[in-house]
Length: 271
Image 1 (cartoon, helix red, strand yellow):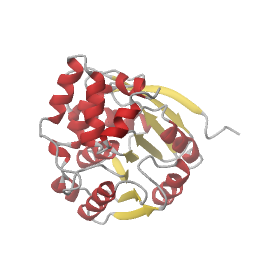
Image 2 (tube, rainbow, N blue to C red):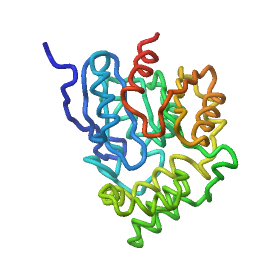
Image 3 (cartoon, rainbow, N blue to C red):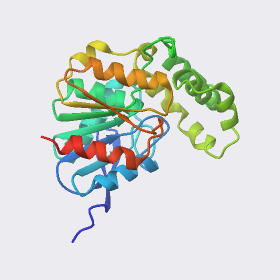
């Protein structure tokens, strides 16, 4: 009997000709996973989620443009990433359910708003800034990050993104610079402007976009992470018609696959 967790690699071609690399697991209804900042399809969390869900779904975990084995045709626009996801959905069989984590949740929202081939939507802690505990960012934050990278100040771009967009304590980010993980973070610093663009001006809640969604939606948050992220998830769930909101006990933003998988399985297998 075939191993459902066996990984098969492939590439989809986006509308602008960019090659988007993906891994495919299992068989059954299609489910596409959308990574957040700093991560690609090799990241442990979503790779583990993909393997765990493979007995029930054809799970497709892909590299967003500019990272991993995917291309990065310029100039960048959020619409290009929406087209990338559409190409992956098409490669998965033409229609798919979608899970997005962190800023990947924001991309999933943007795509679902314009692509009826996305049939269901699950979101993990979309990091919008919805109150004074996480103030709105400058509307040109994406341009500022891009300028830093173009000037060769990749570490500074990472630091600004972590402190201002992710609300990480400055002293914690300063300490991160000494860790081995800082090098791969700098390596994808050019994609942080993409994340800022996907999140929208100021990281503000896109209330109108959310209210127009028609797909069944599940919004998940943890109770062990920053309160502002929990409130952002609550605001997203309140704005999406009929959305279900669940809180995962003991989970911070870096959610454990074993906590995430049962929630996704229950949601995606339900008609």
